[in-house]
Image (cartoon, rainbow, N blue to C red; front, side, top):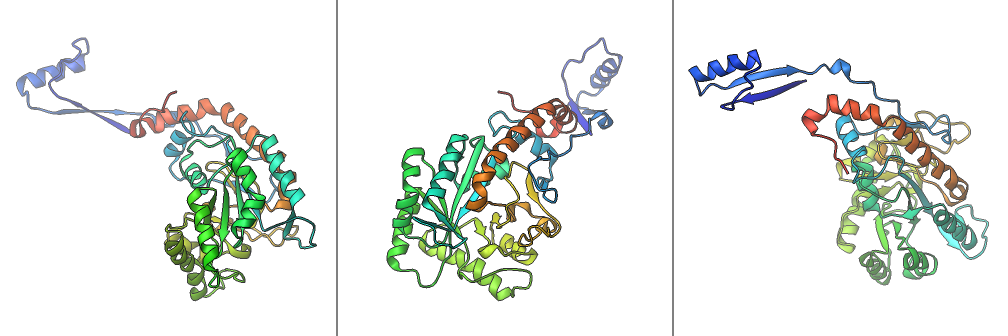
Length: 361
């Protein structure tokens, strides 16, 4: 790496023989620009530590990084105005909350739902919006050290959100993300109610395609993929006056072609139904192969787009996982602090000249 120093008509240090030569040259020709090059020994840069591995992950689920620019990553990571290392996000998607058991594995009883919400609060979690999540995952903006993205699947009316989620919005300012399928038969009343919840900031609607029966994969036709992805964009523009940037893969189905199509259309986040763990800045657990013990989990690692294949928990997994998520964040913070000096030294040698000094408090 070279640092170029432009010397014009400034008075040099006369105690330096090389500076005296410069002074003589300038005296003979004061318009001469002399460029001095100084070589930085990049071999002196330390080797960066390995990616943190949580003991709470399944052995087949490996954390993946997604920021190619190491210098930018380190600057965001150690900026004191950003989220601290170890900040963790748990993503939970509810399908149907009911007052009493129904026998449907997709349903969550009100008691189970309340237990999850209370346990999250007791363990220090705070709910965030999709926009906060995107900004954190891309740039490491500051969010609560233990964050949760609460999602509700389906076209539920205002009564449903008032009954189950309103008290947490009033008491704790916890928003909820509605994974919204833009079905053709939604009533005008429900559209108006949903738009009112959106304007309030209480419910953030994000895309879930246009057909409840869709299961996207690499075998899906271009027509079907386009219908689900573009159909959501059109409906959201017409009704919510916004462009959704998150796509919750309907019924958990996805593939390389659907992910690539979503990217081309401007989607920035995609959520699977794989409960591989929580996520952190530049740290998302994925798998490259099918796990016989979890055959419904579609391997997403080889797609190589972590932000479009994000993991999330179902309610029956969430309650048990909350403590492990908290512990993973704590472990990650300790691991980062233990390697802080090494990462700062690497930045000073490899990055400072181009990216400037690391921000200070």
